[in-house]
Length: 255
Image (cartoon, rainbow, N blue to C red):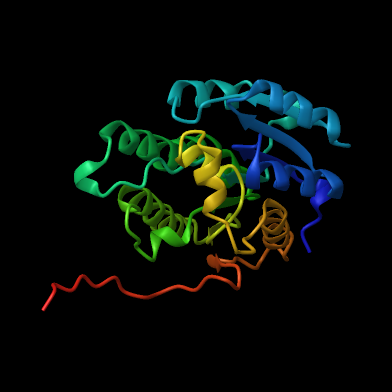
C-alpha cells in the first residue's frame, strides 16, 4: 500500500465540500497538506483543526500567474507534491443554452478546465522527474449523462474525464498515476453556489434523497490514493443509491 504518512497532498478548493473532507481524511492519516482556496478565513480555521503540518494558499485557480507563483514559492518541506487533488470547480445556472448567461459559461470553463490545467501543468514535471506522483481530477456524472440546463457544466466535466485518460496515456512508462472521479448527487455547497446563495433552492435539490457527502468522497479519494503504487484507477463513477444513470428526455407534441 502507499503510506499516507509519506505523502504531501495538494488540494484545490480545500475550504469546503470534497476538498475540506479530503483534507480532514488525509490529516487524520498523517499526510502533509497544502490547502488552496479563495477563502482565507476558512483555510486558516481548517489549518488550526488539523493535526499535521499544513501550508495554506489563498488562490483562485483561474489565475495562471498566481498558480505558477504559488507553486514555485512552496516552502522546501512542502515542495515535493505526491498527490494533487484537482477539486476546485463549480456549476452556475440551470437555464437552457439559449437563455444562459455567457459570463457563467466563461467562469465554468475558466475554473473547471483552465484551473485544473494550470495546477496540473505546474506540478507534473516535478512528479515525472521524481518518478512519484498521483493526480486525482474531480469530474462529474454530468460529463457522461446530459441533463436539462447542464450544457456547459457537463461539457467541462466531459473534458476532465477525457483529459485524465489522455494524460495517463502520455505518462505510460512513468510511475505517475491519474484518476478521474465522477460523483453524482452530492450535498455540499455545490448547489448553493449554483443558485448564487439561494439556500431555499439549494436545499430543494436534496429534498427526499440521501445524497453523497463530502466525507463519502474523502474516503473514496483516500482509498484510491493509498492503493499499491503499481495500481491505477483510471476512472470511477459514484452515485447514491437514490440516483441512476441513463434515461432519455423526449418532447412529445400534443396529438
